[in-house]
Image (cartoon, rainbow, N blue to C red):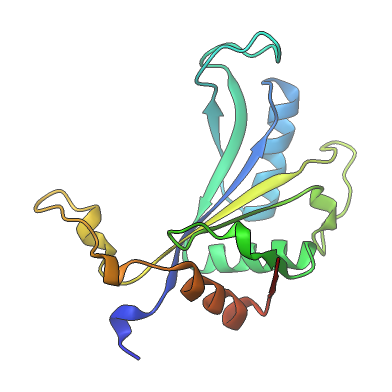
Length: 169
């Protein structure tokens, strides 16, 4: 196989949406820190929504971006928590995959901590092939040609081989 056609994980983003700031958000940040050994970043609301009691620019969630081995470890751990199963509709047309876990205590090796509580989380995994740098560089930025873009089928095959998952409908 052509080495330029090999699919690889660019990054994995783990997000916990809390909906409010304060102590609950601090506990979610503590959970992400213990899971990934990396400091999470807060995300802020973009609009005001009085029904949910959210004001614009209020901290409502936290996230961690993982790359390389850390991303592989986190994905493997969380996939074990959901039974190594994904649906085909969880893959988008750019070949990325997003899935969630309802309770973090479903992850093997994680115990319930009354100081933290129970949180669900979303995981988004971005895939790319070598050469995607042309899309991000400053000088002579170009589009990635269609024949070099990642397809959902390639990503599904990669996930089956690397993480031993089942894909259903």
